[in-house]
Image (cartoon, rainbow, N blue to C red):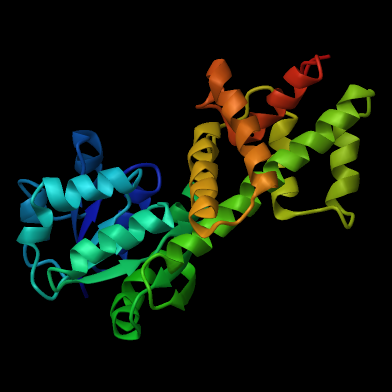
Length: 295
């Protein structure tokens, strides 16, 4: 089994790290939040004094941080990369812009260490269940080495390319589709609500029709709730659709529908609703149409 340093014990990172422990891996946590470190220690993680100590003799460093800036902070500003073994692997699993991933990978591989670009999809539910989708881009030998680790946290594991940034691009495309799907479900519901159609009935019809989608079935019921439990926040898609648009600019690819979806999530965030469930992007449509969910 591998010795794994795990940086970023947030809503997804903590259950992922715990699943690695359950699978028999030795795990050392890295996070500024002492409470999550205590929770991970109670699950069987090895105690460490600091981030540099966590990566010494570790086979793999997994970065499940918020963004590329945090990944760079951990790797380069905190002295972690220098403390790693020469043959260790850096595995970036956070959602980051493809260009940023390429830049980080170049800095890591320049030291002779291996880099795996492996973002995930599946949310907190998938992280808890160990059923994430993992989109890895790296050399085949590195993929073979990290696959047993991935199998402890994911069920759908793909090798999508050998160049850093390709995994991030696959995740970017995934988030484009997810964000647009949520926004267009909200648009459809808002239209029906404008003329007084019962949205419960509409949802039942659409969920069994050719118009159905995973997002319709998952987010649709939450759009009908005034304050649903937060599964994924509005601000997640403000960030992720920003990454989509940045990737589009870098590739000189026009993404007009993604841009509109981004504006709708941004509108919700701008009204102070960035931390509510992303299904509540429907409130942006209600605001545009001069209607509330209660009307």
